Image 1 (cartoon, rainbow, N blue to C red):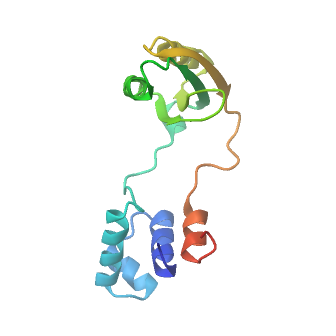
Image 2 (spheres, rainbow, N blue to C red):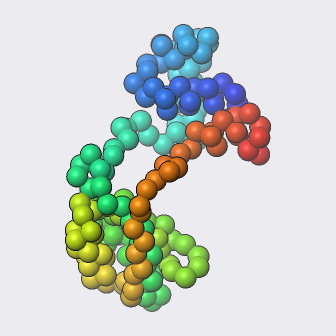
Length: 158
């Protein structure tokens, strides 16, 4: 899937996203064409999905984060609800799940009162039957993928 050089390249890009192809080739000790070919291949295979900046919602005055489990009316299905959720800017992610609910959303808000507004907007969506909300108190381990990349690149994640 990926090898050690791919892992090193991804690690470099994740730790220094503004590094150019030429500088990456210098640091990794390989030809510029090798780095470009690796990047093109990783992108084409969907391993690298973007190059955009990571955004901190807290820096945009949205410091309250919560996970909301949705129960969805089965007749309409998940897709129409997901399309309606996409219209709510504070909904950062939505996943269909197994277990007690049907969909799990990660949302942000400016305050607890603003979170109530977001929850109300979600509950009003056609197809949503009920929600359950858990407010995030702290994030001791934020979303990450680099340890997985390195494990796979080194053969440990197989």
